[in-house]
Amino acid sequence: MRATFVTAMTVINLVAMGVVVSGAASAPPPAPGILRAERIELVDARGNVRASIRTEDNGDAVFRIMSAKGDIRVKIGGSDAGSGIVLMNDSTAPGVQMLAKGSGSSITLIDPGKPARIVAP
Image 1 (spheres, rainbow, N blue to C red):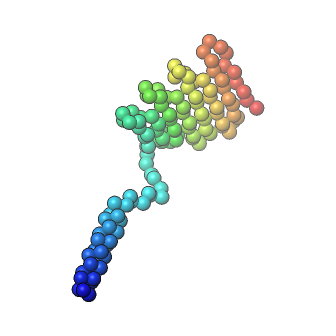
Image 2: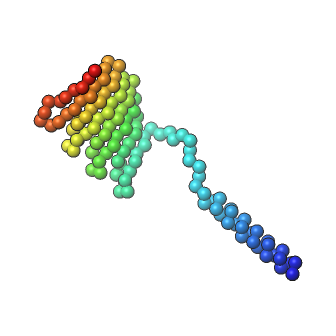
Image 3: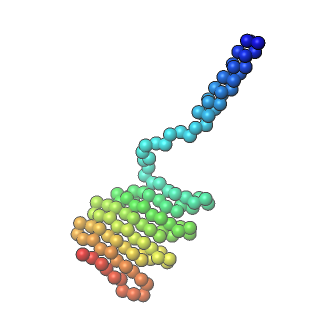
C-alpha cells in the first residue's frame, strides 16, 4: 500500500514538473528595453508600408504615415534647424503645414484654388 502511494506521488510530481518546464519553454521572451534601428516600418496585413520612422541622409529624423495606396498623408520631421508637421490632402498636396524654427514659427493652411493662409506670431 505504501509503495503504491509513493509511486502515485512520484508520477504526480513528474507530471507537475513537466507542466512547469513546458510552460516555461513556451513563455515569450522578455521585450528589449531599447530598440535601435536606422529605419522602422509598420506594415498592414498585405505587407504594404503604412508608416515609417527613419533618419534621412541629411540627418533629419522623419516619421511618415501613408494611406493604403502608399501616398504620404502625414509627415513629421525634426532637424537641427527646427521641426515641422505636414498634413496632406487627398491629392497628396500639403493642406496644413506647421513649422517651428529658431527664426520663427508658422502654421500655413492651404486649400486648392485659394490663397494660402499663414498664421504667425
